[in-house]
Length: 586
Ligand code: ADP
Image (cartoon, rainbow, N blue to C red; front, side, top):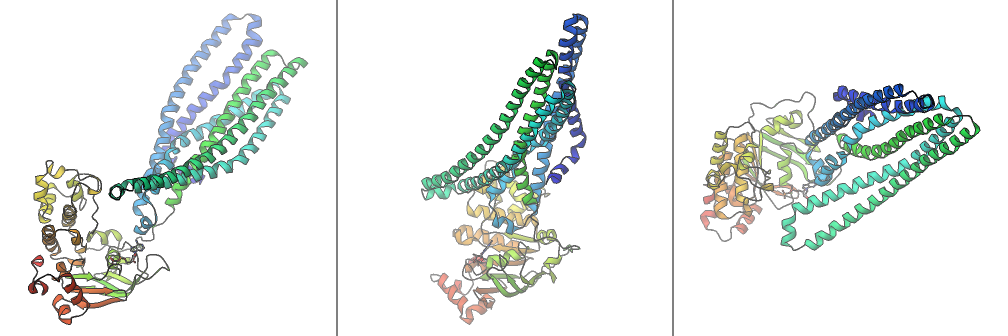
């Protein structure tokens, strides 16, 4: 863990060593001061050597300017090293999160991940530069003062340094407590973040059900736990600091009493005693520094550990060595005896499912909810891997293809369209980031959303709000379609949301989708049967797999499940519409 932490210093080696050099200068100047004091009291004052005293004062003044510059450097650039290290860690964690599987995000809460990225790493920059500085300065000061103190008086020095070992023991004993308390605080902190994220993103639902009180109670629960865990941490911290400081205080007392006693015995003179006391503060200061460092280290490292925990999660879905780049896509999609579970050894969502969609053709999936229609659509861009069998594009198992090349060629329009906070243009551009303004507009026109956009005061620069809250469901759908027009993939996966739309909107969207599907292999998950009568093949799914398949007219003629579903949905429609001469398909 420490080695991993240290690896983050590498790119900033130069600045970091300069920082340590500045720290060395600061501690060296600190060490010189008592030496001069000793000389002044023992030699210069008794002999009234005013000139030498002035010289010493001038030297000290000069040294203090140097010390001030070193201090400035340490504070500014030392912090910068820490800041850069924190920056590097955040960057690594964020890009690692981008590589993880969809299933990872199914399992983890957004708020918790955010706290690993933010608050858990907050103390890293302090630790990253103060840590080594503290250790370095403290070692120099401890060693320096130990040598100097030995020269003044050996027994006194040995006794005081004996107490240092006691300090080490106490630190070791309390360390574990503090570490686990800090880890607990982080865990509940993450839980609280997740709660807040959840509550804020669901605030509209909360209001509509007038469940504000309930949300407050839920929040209070985690907030109280948080306070409790923090109190445990405060206790551990209290014990640690009070205990270690007590020992340090006793150390000063021992020096004062024993020193006085040695002066009384005539073993040392007053000048030596004063120098001794001054030096002892110089080694007590680094000890206090180390004590503070220990706490900073323990809390900082728990944040680092939590980051590493995520960094060690390997994506299960990754490119095979030598994965092929899919180019010149035909668009043939095959499900070959696919069995699939979301969790290993979990329930089979699909069993020996086979389906073939010829290039440029369209297949619609229908069936009761929960039979696995959406699941099938998620297997095409390889969001999940099959347990057995294979999904193939142009006859190649998608596990042999590079993930980028698969996803570049698959366009999805989801039932629940996601919009990023930003402008309408940004959201369309997401389909192909390097597209020109003209291409964006052309895509919007094809998606039947251009006129709406032009009616907005800011046009394409209109802000859509978080997750697109300022847009209607139909508008979001059309923007999502524009996005896919821009991407221009060979394969389309449409999870229809038309059930939530009014007739007018449905027609506009259906027209855009029909246009989009031209020349592309299309898999549609249909909720409204009226929209799929034109599909080349309709596949009716049940719990046991495919129940019926064929074009609309054939299925109607067969008078099976599909025909029943269809009639039920269109009980109030005319015969022509029932036969599939529905206007929505035109
Ligand atoms: P449909 O689209 O036909 O309504 P889905 O494919 O959404 O059905 O769901 C099929 C089954 O898979 C359901 O039982 C559902 O609970 C389960 N399921 C869907 N998504 C996940 C997921 N991310 N993790 C675990 N189970 C899931």
